[in-house]
Amino acid sequence: MNLTGNAKLAGVMGWPVAHSLSPRLHNHWLEKHRIDGAFIPLAVTADHFPHTLRVLSQVGFRGVNVTVPHKQAALAAVDEADDRARRIGAANTVIFRPDGSLFGTNTDGTGFLAHLHASIPGLDLTSGSAAVIGAGGAARAICVALADAGMAEIRICNRTLARAESLALELGPEVLVINWADRAGLLDEVDILINTTTQGMVGQPELDLDLATLPDQAIVYDIVYNPLETPLMNKAQARGNPVVGGLGMLLHQAVPGFSAWFGVEPEVTEELAAFVSQGLVER
Ligand SMILES: NC(=O)c1ccc[n+]([C@@H]2O[C@H](COP(=O)([O-])OP(=O)(O)OC[C@H]3O[C@@H](n4cnc5c(N)ncnc54)[C@H](OP(=O)(O)O)[C@@H]3O)[C@@H](O)[C@H]2O)c1
Image (cartoon, rainbow, N blue to C red; front, side, top):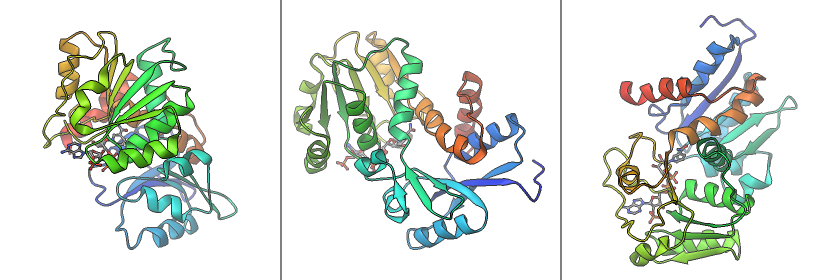
């Protein structure tokens, strides 16, 4: 990397941020497109987040991605946000505009959908039903994306019932909430099952879910990407279901930010996935 004084700058704000794969991803695209720019990991505590966000916009940065635990604070801190970010209640991408104002959006759900369509060509989401396990930040983004895509029914099941109920209330009538204890019954006749919990991540137990009633052709999407293949994916694959892992969602959610900050729409390829996933081994 050889930066000039005109280098375009962006970064990812989180606490901690050392685990983030975003610098590896964006800097790979920068090199590929020979852009005079850099994407910097920015470790910022919650106390310092709003102030630092504003300062970055005043020292030449073009914008930032925002990761745990600042996505809700990012929405509160921006001057304007799109409807999607407001409905999700969080922003993961902030664009610093030339007039000094801050614009927030959320690309987690659209990244999920883009990856799902890329993985299952011809998939029609305008009918059918989805079962979503979890009701945290990622689940909110995915449920909003599924509702916007026209999914006829979304079933949400979360360990903490109140969280699932509050998400369902915001999404509207096509959403059903299922008690955690009844989760095996969640899978009857679903077209897609999505794990949005932390279960199955490295260091966490696998998701405790019996797949016996899952239809054979139902897609199983696990948004966990470390490991690349989770116990849920292995279990689903063993019974013949099509499975999709979460790395592609991470790659696709990054596209709109890169394109806004650096002026080029980057591609998500197999080669990129292999390069970024190598970062899981090295960190
Ligand atoms: N692929 C991607 O691009 C992408 C993007 C965002 C997130 N993720 C991954 O998605 C996962 C969730 O992220 P998030 O930001 O949504 O986190 P979050 O807001 O903290 O939500 C965590 C979710 O996991 C559930 N959970 C935690 N421990 C559990 C347990 N022992 N049993 C059952 N459920 C449990 C929580 O249930 P309660 O409400 O009951 O606590 C909640 O639904 C993480 O693994 C993250 O790495 C992937």
